[in-house]
Image (cartoon, rainbow, N blue to C red; front, side, top):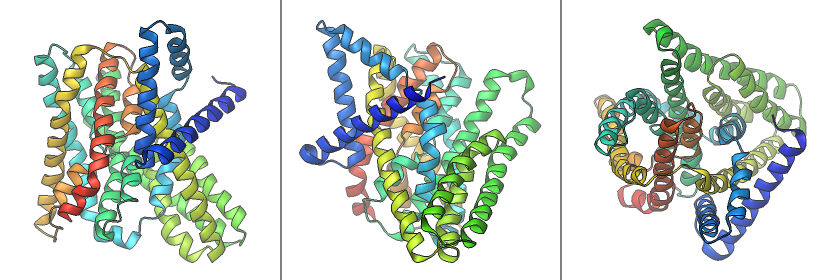
Length: 414
């Protein structure tokens, strides 16, 4: 376990690197901050790797050791994620969300499960054809971790596009909730991998209930606690601190209770942004809460995407894996079209669906750090290494290519 000094040194290093990358991007490149920072991180990783090939192996080895000390899975899933989900949910309008509830619910449940199955099956046969065979359960795990859109990447993109309120709510709502459902599906499949003899339909149903429904209920409890505390005082400094405690303490307690921390924090964020802000906070407190979480969200986003770029230096690699990763990119995009189109077609029988919504959601379904973190949480070995590499290839394509083109794409079809 890292000591306090090591954690502080690590945080200082990451913040310093992220600040330098953000400055370089803003001063000389001009890309959206998160994308520019990630690309700079990747270029730096490539430069360090090339230095190792021309006789500066010590530099490469030292950098790899430093990056290897960073547990990406812990840093994101048990560190940054709760803050970023809360900040994202804070500005989603609950009334608008209710209008889109059936579309969002169907995409976050049926869509994720359908995508997991389709990606898993296609990956199994593709890798076998490319002599990179992977057990079917690992292919399903890959399907589960790559299927949910990453709310962090999606929200960072949506905020700068200025899309309609209805479309923003649909995109943001789906990404916030399908992330939690995707993690639950991943957890169930991981249990099946580790203890296949203990898994029964009843056990699977119980895990789903504990994680998904438990997370929803616990999020409502957190929101209720926050409402009571903030409604009985009027001090913006204390109330900002209360929101911070809800996120940090709430996420940790949710994980301890074996409920879905992401779902709980999203629900708490929705309640804070819609109920607490309107009925339990003064104008000054509302402004302070908004400013605090907006700034924290921006800082953590930059750090996360810088880290994703730097991770390239320690991602395992084999030549045949690159071919498999490139082949999977169009497959994952095509499966996204199907997994979005089927639920929306079902909902469209009963409700009016915005034109071109399937196209926009399919191309705007960005994958990000959560997929990489889940891949790194798999049991160590060659199977994990292959999945980590495939995930990284798809995430990089998603953030760079889809992230940079989604703006013109939406303008074309919205």
